[in-house]
Amino acid sequence: MPSPYHIATHAESQVSSAALTALCNAAFAEYPGAIIAGESWMDWFRRRPGCAPELCGAAWYGRELVSSLFVTEAPLRLGGRVLRAGIVDTVMTAPAHQKHGLARELLTRAIGLMRERGFACSLLYTNPRRYPYGFYQSLGYRHHATAELLAGPRPVEPPSGECWRLLLPDETEGARRLVNASWGEADGFVAYGEDLWEWHRLHRPEGEELFEIAQGPHGAPTGGAAFTEAGLLAAGREQWFSCVLDIVPWRCRARSPSRAHPEGRATESPPYSGGTTAEGLAALLCAAPRPRVALVAGCGTWLHGGATELGLRSVAEEAAMLLPLNSAAEAALQSPPSNWYASVESIVGA
Image (cartoon, rainbow, N blue to C red; front, side):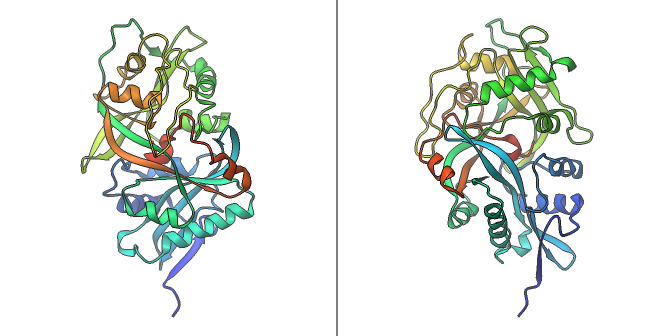
């Protein structure tokens, strides 16, 4: 009997942002930490540099889009080297069409295409306590690091004398260099080239304003962060937060070693030389426009330790799962991850 489903890539089919938005909100309606997507957000997400329509998959039931996934090509840092990776995001199936093997079919096809194109590995994030975790393991993905979405009240400004200021338009390039320098040696990091930075910070979804701050002298910021407003599913309901991006407290050495592997959560010594890590973080988070903040941090890292010290608590746990596609990736996975950098776009989409 022929299948009632039609499988195609996004490049081969007419996939609208409206259909993807409806599918996303239906599929993740009960997923902790999921963003409440709007059509403008979906338009923006699809413009992500490296997002390849010829690798992204879709399944149709008649004219209804019922399953989909995104694949973005990116230079991923792993095991002390930079590897060509396919980052898989937003694997989603409409509730009425789950358990029909659609996600398996789409992801199996995507993995085959990544192999054909010479990708070294594939990365995705998923909740380790939910069904998809075992599903991804069955396809060869391995739990390599753990990250958490942490949320809580905006901290008060610490008494250390550190302060923030608005990031000025002519400092955008300096902010990009600062983030790359601070996080450049962390596993899981994708360096911000000009096109990725413009998408990430300058060309946000329609109607969304990014609140950018800096520390240090004009023209040469030594710290900073950015905030975007996001509606996230927390404690079973939609809640609004200032979602924090690109956190670099003043003099913070994000390259300090750590072990963010799933078997343990060792906490490294605070890298913030102007006080404790929590004080350095509070000096930035106190600028958040909303009274509640949310951020993504690799477990066992200075960022995770500082955030929990400030009272932020876990909303969702995410496993960073990697599929090696060649010997270089296989070798890179033999070492525990160093100071894992979790991409906020891959976890909550912000």
